[in-house]
Image 1: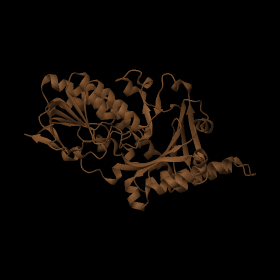
Image 2 (image 1 turned 45 degrees about the vertical axis):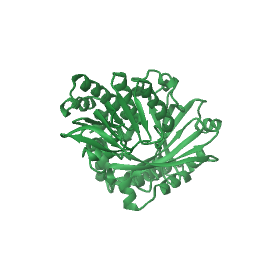
Image 3 (image 1 turned 90 degrees about the horizontal axis):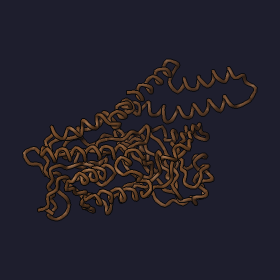
Length: 434
């Protein structure tokens, strides 16, 4: 292994790494794809949504062969109170052809995606941890693996080793993430007969539905989710690590609470838990993104905080960043220039892409998630909205004008007063619009 030299070493065979390896290998470069797990996706707990657009750019009509679950035709948002739910949903059959997104299991999808990179000529090196980078004259020239005699040389190292990016920290691209820059998500995969899933969610046989859950996270900033797979459901919740530390709450306690909510309970009733897993999610957003390239290296995906939590987009941003890194590696190869100045082409491409534009739009969101706003937004406000609607829709002889005033008073109480309610609304608007 020590004698072998590559044009590109990609560390991490998730969506970002596999996309980078696929593009670079197709460009004629000699590529190594290193993965710590037994196989790509082996250690990933994702059971969420995979979007079409970014993967299709690399593999047209990939959905005809990729291991996907259900085509999402309906997306719901539930605002949870203790015993009730305010629901917003959108369904459109135009999401079927062409598909917009699917539910998927990364343990299956990552294997398939990495296999496309292997078919293009990428060399798989799995069950191998990367412990450090090799630096000579200030330039990254390879990596050190946990294999015996495991130094691997390359002109470019693409770092796609996930949210706990060891190499990102080694290069001081970023520090250890702070508790308010990551959330901890826990998830169960619950088996149910496919026909029962279709009946409960009002779906035809290959159609899928997603439900995002706001509220009932014990006042902590975070979201729950319930996604339909072919014959399982993915139920989970992710909350900020800073809030878990502040309140000394265990993540499984939040998930168990969600499972007992009457609206959730009836959808999972009779199901058998097949898997339980936990994973950190990058939440720092735009302001936490590290420098994306240096002498001999680039960094992609979760390792670079490329997650849009508002739209639950992460895998598609990872694929996009991997594609752009692969293209930058090809340009550097043919220019025979692997300096920071050359690889900044990748950073420039990211700035022009949806990654930078969307994360910048929501750059104020991170501040909104901090306490005490988190307690208001994810605890008190959902309960107040539910209570206000209960009062307003109850026919009990009270005039509607009085009910309307009562509803506003409930919301004002959460905010701390009328002007505070206006300030909270403005703060939320600014957080969602850069």
